[in-house]
Image 1 (cartoon, rainbow over the protein chains, first blue to last red):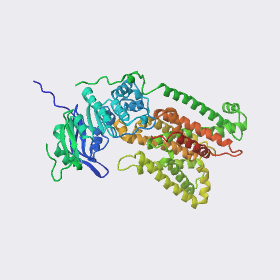
Image 2: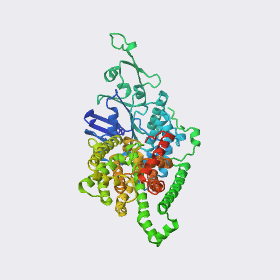
Image 3: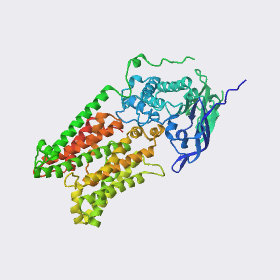
Image 4: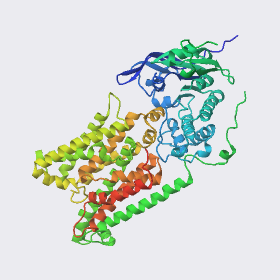
Length: 278
Length: 355
């Protein structure tokens, strides 16, 4: 009889205009991020994906519009309080030399610490748990600068996890990783979602991985959202042509059942005719 | 769907590593602290005993507690003690300021002078001599401090763009620009006016000697505020070392942290440059040495830098008294002479750290 409550909106953006100095990158953008979902933001280079993510994570002040976190304007809430709810990992961050993995992850605990208590057993447990989740507990005492790309990415993810927020914004968490490590990191993100109920918004480049791991896709072009919804509805040959200027076929991923994009490329293009629809 | 809950490999479970502290690092910090304190004590003892008029530690103690004869009393109370205290304060201030500067610019070659304070102070001193005819060092110290503060504000404003505070890079660029501008103005004035040159000469060589002891109590409140701000800046610097965006995402107020840090640098360096003249290399070397003891954690790095800076400056001052008898070599020159090769070795031993 009782209907399930409508999914809660965690992040709500309205009328966002974003940019750097005089260049406007995003204009008139509205977006809702629902609780307990994985959302992937995709779009061609320079379409404003990262800019949007930075604004959602209050790293960038909007020229116009606003972002609400759990119903309250994010820029008006104390930044430390926001940091206990929302974690954001920028694209390819850099750690200083000599910093150990454990040190890096421990710095994720700052939002819950006080000047009179720099370290507690809760912090200890959270750092251990974060390292265990990403499978790098054995690297805790290694320098971040000695790690391989995949390990380093896990170390930074651990830092964001140690922050203990149930909302995570990740800017290209798979950059510079080979395919196996990309899948590892995305599997981890999926586990955070299914096992711990975390809400994730991530910017991804790989359309196929985005379609496979995200429950919801947000497609951007030139600073606007041109489509959003479940991958099976969003990823179409027409959309790929319009948004990415990409001639491609879309078939069903034989493993996951999600859409799979197969680019045509000039060598296989049939002269004069559009892409033959199967 | 199966959920892989046993993700921890057995090898990892066997590691009982207790982040973030390990025994080895704690031991290194403890041993480092003891060595530092011993070095500091040795430098202080040497500083009150060694000189053209050598005194035994016993005589110095006598002079401090009661009297050791008119001559020894004067040497201890009016020369050696103020000089040592000035060295301790200036060294600690420059060590702290150097670590702050390297942290805020994320630049391993960062130096307190990068904020424009050294040349800003020099310009104020030169203008003061040329236009107002002030030549006593106590008066010049305060004009120097004012010039340092103005230069720091100028660097901050030049480095800030459109309501956003400065970034590590814009700060370094603005600092270099303001430094060169003030430096060329100083050169121009000094070239045109021989009399100013004569007075400026004495200020320009960084030295702990020949300064008015009355400067000490006047410096203290400023240095105290600077030290408190510097130490309070540690946690924020730890986050800023991961980049401005990460620091913000962890709930740090980046703009405020930077203002606190730059204010501390300005107070610490400005007062020191005003009182002793420009002393290079302490702020550059100390953070690297201290980092070798404490690792990258600024909450430890900052206090260790203060101790190390104090020990290094006092030791260099003592060396300056013995290498060129019967005269003395100013501490600024000694530091540059021993500092340069030392720094080259540091750079060659390990590739320059990324901050």
